[in-house]
Amino acid sequence: MRGVHSVAQVRAAESDAMARLPEGELMQRAAHALSVQCAALLDRVYGAHVVLLVGGGNNGGDALFAGARLAARGARVDALLLDPARAHADGLVAFDRARGRAHEADPQLLAGADLVVDGMFGIGGRAGLTGVSADLADAAHDLLTVAVDVPSGVDADTGAAGGKAVRADVTVTFGAIKSGTVLGPGADLCGELRLVDLGLELPVTDAHLLEAADVRAVLPRPGAADDKYTRGVVGLAAGSEQYAGAGVLATGSAVHGGAGMVRYVGLAPDPVRARYPEVVVHPDSRPHDVRVQAWVVGPGLGTDGTAMALLADVLSTDVPVIADADAITLIARTPRLIRGRSAPTVITPHDREFERIAGQPGPDRLAAARRAARDLGATVLLKGNATVVAAPDGTAYVNPTGTPWLATAGSGDVLSGLIGALLASGLRAPLAAAAAAYAHGVAGQLAAADGPPSAADVLAELRGALGSLATG
Ligand SMILES: NC(=O)C1=CN([C@@H]2O[C@H](COP(=O)(O)OP(=O)(O)OC[C@H]3O[C@@H](n4cnc5c(N)ncnc54)[C@H](OP(=O)(O)O)[C@@H]3O)[C@@H](O)[C@H]2O)[C@@H](O)CC1
Ligand SMILES: [K+]
Image (cartoon, rainbow, N blue to C red; front, side, top):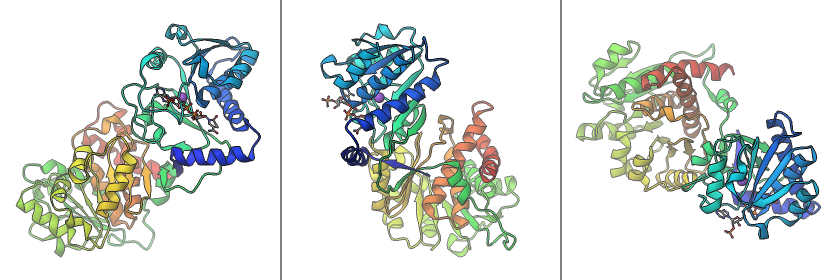
């Protein structure tokens, strides 16, 4: 797991470091690392054409010092100054000495560049570029681009990008992973994220970027003494006559997600039985009377009185529950259904469902998920290109494996079933949700490799994804 930090935390750590280091040392460390990364991206440095986009702050200073190092190694380096009067003075002197050439910010000067170094705005940046900075971002769009610290136009805290931002192939980020480089549009605009250690002393953080090893460490593996009950029994209250498929998908995901046994009490027993003979169907039982270690409720359930009665019954149990889709709509009408639960609850809203239950998420998705988790006393998995999982105590996980191909009908049902299986195995709710999001993303990537995937294709890849994650 990699810690994710806010801009305020990074600024505080930087000022502590600056107080104990010689003046300019941090920027030299940053510029050195940046120049090494740039050199590695070029076939050869000598004779390469590098264009720096230089803003008026320290982000531009990093670019100028790195450009000076590349120029000293024989690169032809042009610096386009957004605001010549505010360009970093010492950086400009070093750049000039190395025979770099500074210009006004003319987008045409980017033509033919082997590498663009985006040093317009870093952690002092706001979301969205306008005017010349937007024109420069456009001109760099198809060129190999390295962003300095954060792609310009990306808010380093939230990842919001407003209308326009630099799209980088590689982002060389300094000292810490800023939340805006792994969240929202920022996660995509960064390209490959490379973290450079500046020797900062960062505070302990409660936001984490998931890695495969974290998932491997928590995925349940049956031991010699296990039987189907000790591995965890998961119950499904999902699917209805009208939306039988959602119940089938969620149930299938629970079956393949590693549960020892799956019980079904939803309203589409026949399709489930036909597709998954290993599932124990309880057509006339109330959830309360069915023994499981975790419940999945909501996918395809409908929102009528019968659905509400099933949901209320599931939520009145004292085992972990993952509530999705129609269950979220129903809970939004009666939030006390989950507020008073004694066992953990996970909800997995997309933006519209989130809005119903906790208001608009807005650009700061990490803060929104945390707020909702605290208010509802539930783990909130807010779906997105970078899904965020927040626990009521503020601990949060960001999943990097999402793919836009997962935005397909039924994909969420697969995620719900998998979370249910992991909850039933005894994993803590926030980790179950986060690990499931990670594995679901990997399954989505595998499924997309063969062409546009359906949710059934994602489900078909789930075993493979879990298998490869378990073995590493
Ligand atoms: N601190 C350290 O120890 C170290 C820092 N380092 C480096 O410094 C970087 C932070 O530098 P920084 O604080 O000077 O801010 P920076 O991001 O250059 O922005 C400057 C100004 O730009 C403007 N502006 C912003 N967004 C805009 C927009 N969308 N459109 C138009 N204008 C916009 C805004 O000015 P305003 O408009 O508010 O007057 C803002 O004040 C950091 O990311 C890292 O690269 C490293 O060297 C390691 C050591
Ligand atoms: K930048």
